[in-house]
Image (cartoon, rainbow, N blue to C red; front, side, top):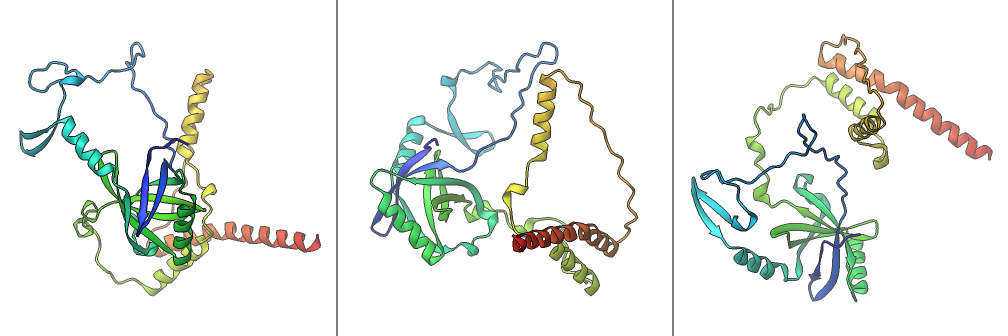
Length: 277
């Protein structure tokens, strides 16, 4: 597993050398853009908006636009020194909090952390302390020239660093348009909605959720490669007679009943077989 960052995590006087690895594998299917006439890849050239000339990489500088058309140019050396100044620091756990106090809207990316040289005991100590207390650590780290707020927690016996957004990066929920105010909900509608939720409630099994679009796209690509003619049939959906909220809820409940009943039958059969064995 590729090491994307290495350094030290500290809490109090305890320092833990660690290596960080991406926990997420991007499985998006990348599609290239081609010229329709000859199927050659399209190039995207960098051109100056003023002189209309193509610009070489060594002619490009970074800048911050502080007003329309006004820039502060930042040298690569300035940015590199600033990055090293912060990146070389040990990552210190600032606070410990309960995981449930952090709303998932703050979560961003997840990284596995392995022990660096000589860090096994300190790694195991932090892991056990987090498990015993049920807490997660709050820390700051520089990743790819950007300071990140992060939590450190335990996932299946491995320390995980999960970057989270700073509070000012999360937009104010009050700015969301067209959010309805509390309205008068009929008791029967609420009871039926809760019943539907109960019928659809199950244990979370990640493996049962798959990316159906990606699977279909891969199948399409393979069929194209094999030279097969691909025809996608569209099944006509029956018209729904559901006209109001209550009817929609009841119809949803009716649709889930056979599924739940079948699951119960399977569980009962398995238990019966187990007893007979």
